[in-house]
Amino acid sequence: MDPFTLIMLAVLALLIFFMFRNSRKRAAEQRELQAKVATGATVMTNFGVYGTILSIDEEENQVLLESSPGTVLTVHRQTINRVVAPAPGSEDEELEPADGEPEFGERVDESDASPEAGTEPKKSDD
Image (cartoon, rainbow, N blue to C red; front, side, top):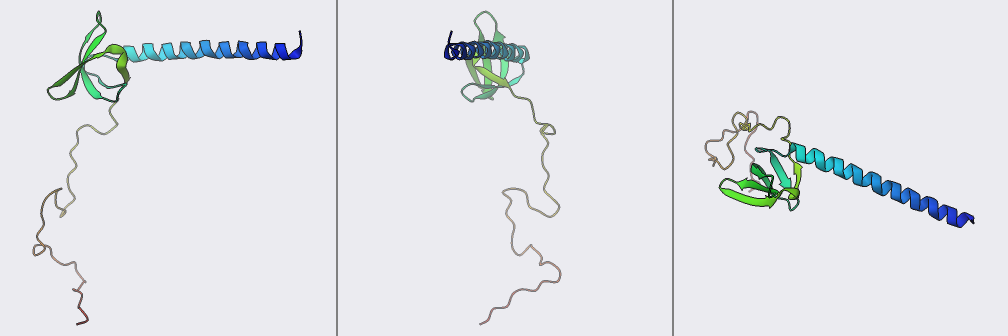
């Protein structure tokens, strides 16, 4: 056998090895994802819709997904791409405005605003 044939066989064997390894890795990730999928979990689908799982039908492989209040979607179980974990510290905390700052959308009258100490109004060169 010539060296070129040996190199081609080695490359082919290496390619097959990586294909099997990759498929096992994907299967393990899929099993892990399906273990996390449960009623009440917030998930993202393959097509980018976020929602909360209301129920799972094991026999039909269907999931009832609430994307917004009152909107329920029926999707195939395999379209669930990932379980979304809430960001740390984002537990529905309302941000309070700093002292003296208006809330978002609140109008502020210019007459109510007092000039800062040590500043005088600008004079025009008229």
